[in-house]
Length: 278
Image (cartoon, rainbow, N blue to C red; front, side, top):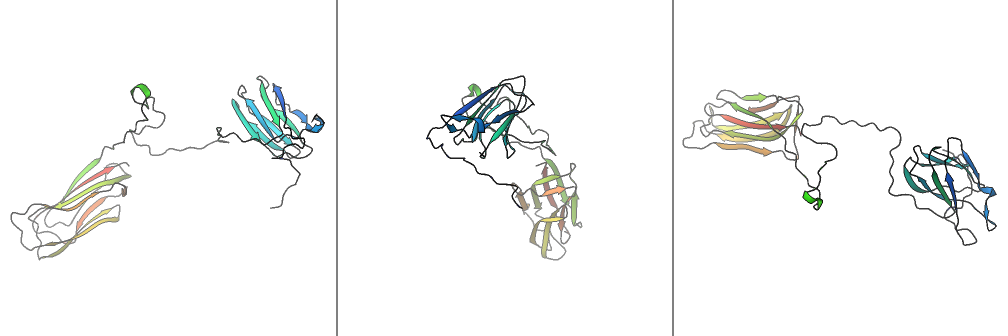
């Protein structure tokens, strides 16, 4: 890209006489530009060439705009605000000001460096905001009572606790799978417990693999050795006890499937699943 022009400036330079200056314009500006020709200004025979301004448009209902010519650079102070700003200071500089014709504004031009306002923030143009899938019970906005009694303590925080959707599943002897589709779609699996009763056995002693699949994605697998005959006086034992704190696998619109690689001849596989919206 080629530059559209170049010009000499005096920014960050104190006037040669060692004295800085300020010129105040105060009044009711309008949509008709007020023209300032700095080439006609001199203070103590020293040409005045501004490079910054302090603007008070706190009473204005429309933005106040300073256009630095001949480069066409705009300095804008929003309605109801006070700002300080710097701008390019071309040689042979002129300027125009437009603003609110019904309210008084003040513009102080200076010929020394100005630090831009750090407390003002503006979002230009139209902001498109979309908040989707808001969970009931989640409060968005300003808490009218953010402080403790007496307003002497720091802000309180309260953890949001979701009401879980619970499902109990079981696989009886001779069966190998069980599945469930959450009532509410697009939830996350937060906790999964799988246990086998103590009397579990299979037709021939060997390995049985227990798996859990969510929305077609394998999320758990464990191999167990079972005897061909049911044991006696053996308590149920846990196969899986997972809490998905930070993982939270999504169920989407699919189902949760618990499966065995081989059917049991005796005993039961039971599972507890907890889903939440987040």
